[in-house]
Amino acid sequence: MHEINETHDVNLRSWIESANAPDTDFPIQNLPFCHFGYETDQEGAAWSAVWSFGVAIGDEILNLVGCSKDGLFDEFEGSLDDVTKLPENLVYFQSETADTLLRFRRKLSELLREEASQELQQKVSRHLHPITNCTFDLPFEIGNYTDFYCSIFHATNVGAMFRPDNPLLPNYKYIPIGYHGRASSIVVSGTEIKRPKGQNRTDQDASPVYIPCKNLDYEMEVGFFVGKSNELGETIPIENAEEHIFGLCLVNDWSARDIQAWEYQPLGPFLAKSFATTVSPFVVTMEALAPFRVPAFERDADDPQPLDYLNGEQNKTHGGFDIKLEVYIQTPKMREENIAPHLLSRSNMKDLYWTIGQMLTHHASNGCNLQTGDLMATGTVSGKGKDERGCLLELTWRGKEPIQLPNGEERRFLEDGDEIIMKGFCEREGFRRIGFGECRGRILPAD
Image (spheres, helix red, strand yellow):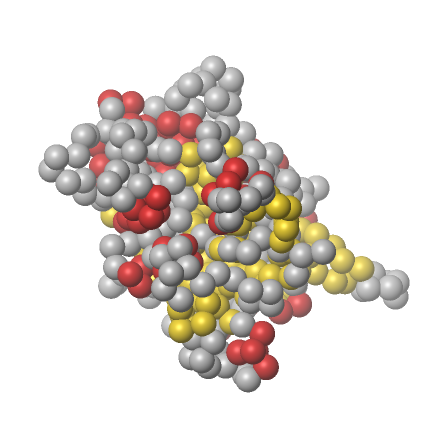
């Protein structure tokens, strides 16, 4: 379990002034990792993009590869010099030396804190790049992607639409439900999403037709990346699950509801999900999230307890995360009228029925070999209240209750030109607020 230490001190300040702003997502107490590109002028040559590995601090990105070449990380075994993608770094950080990432976090905190010497500040400042001048790519080379279904409120709502008398299937409270998604169509925040085509059979009296999706939706999810892998045939005990998790990000699991309704039986999601999934560019580490741990979801008295392999005391007392999640929409008309994005819902990761530790342990319980850079997502994060529903399918109750927008427009599902903006952040008295940045995507028309 990751413990609270001096890097979480609420009074810790950075010599980078933007990191001290009360509303920044990236104070010195956060330091999320990213894969970013910046432009450099090399001895009069044309401007060209250079890709590197960095951390966000205030309104800046610190180039870790540059810092390493400048000798700032010489105390660490191994090297970052030739690395431009995170998976290789994860192998380094989450190696057999369990405290390597923690020591590296402490080193970054020392370099960036207000007390650093002027000489050190000047050395570090050479490797800072304004976020507004940077381009971001996927934080990992994602080989595999698994999407879970771990909000009991979401599962109950969706089940009630299709099975009013039996909204939750018998396995839900025993097993973290999930499916294998499509890794190749995962894109970074800001990538435009083309409306997918597929088979639609909303007219039950006619044959299906191949047309652009009519009921396009988003799903507000949290993702987590595998750092330390396991061998094929090797399981991961619940007590050790979090040793294999590097950090968390935001995920938008775009969903074509009308395509999904026709295709999902009997094998589950397929083309309705595989056309695109958007992730935020910043990975907030488990170390940074230590102050925001909460107990696992409190089950009803008549609910079954998790089976032994999913039932650890540490997971029960600290397996959840208090992460506030928000979803906004901005339509083309709102942009034209200079109307700010409209808040659709607020939810919280602590309301998930299953923890990320349980998801990972279950995933490997059959001996599945999880690999560095694999992405797993929680499924739609919804709460009890109507304003806590994490997708339009729930918010509009399958399109029957349209949402009214501030300029008089209404939405049942997403229309071309609509942009969805997701945000996530943690707040707790006595600690600095930390955030995840944004997860954005705008809908383009189908071909």
